[in-house]
Image 1 (cartoon, rainbow, N blue to C red):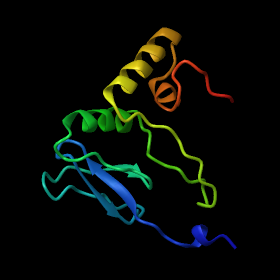
Image 2 (cartoon, rainbow, N blue to C red; image 1 turned 120 degrees about the vertical axis):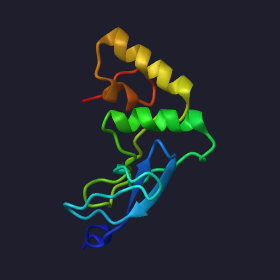
Image 3 (cartoon, helix red, strand yellow; image 1 turned 180 degrees about the horizontal axis):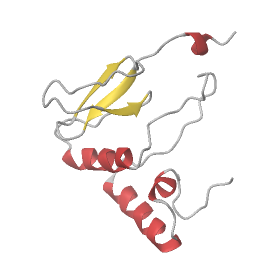
Length: 123
């Protein structure tokens, strides 16, 4: 029996304008609100590691990743496999992936998921 499949883990939720994140249970139909600004929190995934609050550049990269609908996940559906998925952490990595997406006419979400922006993903 899969241990991770029966255990309910908290998910990271982030408020990009306030540059804060919280771990909360993911309940269906429940909207998580930021305690600072009362805006809805964005689900960032199980493996989100927020940058420090004073790191405005780091949070701008997080905002770009979350805006594309990507989450910081490293688990399969049941949680047994840990398949680390790449997400850019710096503005330079973000710029490189935006340039590749524009040059190759790729969706930005696909380019942001590539560990090396110049090597296409298999699939």
